[in-house]
Length: 124
Image (cartoon, rainbow, N blue to C red; front, top):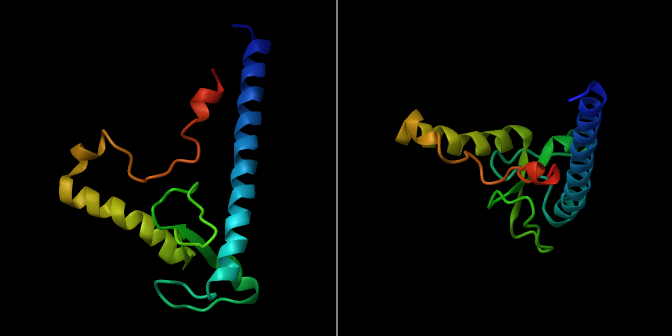
C-alpha cells in the first residue's frame, strides 16, 4: 500500500470515530436532559444531592446496560453520581472475576453495551 492510501484509511477511520462519538453525545444529551426533568437530583445509591456546577457529576445509568433503550418514561434509567455509576459497572465485572476465575472471562464481554461494537462494519 502506498503512503497516501494509508493516510486516506487513517483519515476515514478518524472521521467515522468522530461521527460515532458525536452521535453518542447527541443521544446522551437527549436522555440525560429527560432524566434530569423526571427524577429528583439525587444519586440513587448514595443519596447525595446535586445542584449548580455539581450537577455535572450526576449521570444517567441504564438499568439494563443498553444505551439504546431509552423509554420516554425513564423506566430504564436511574440517576447515579459518577462514583456510584463507576462502581455499578465495575461491581459486576469484579463479581464475575471472583466467582468464575480469569479463564472464564475470555469468551464473553464484561458489560452489556459497547458504543463502538458496529465500528468494524462501517469500514467494509
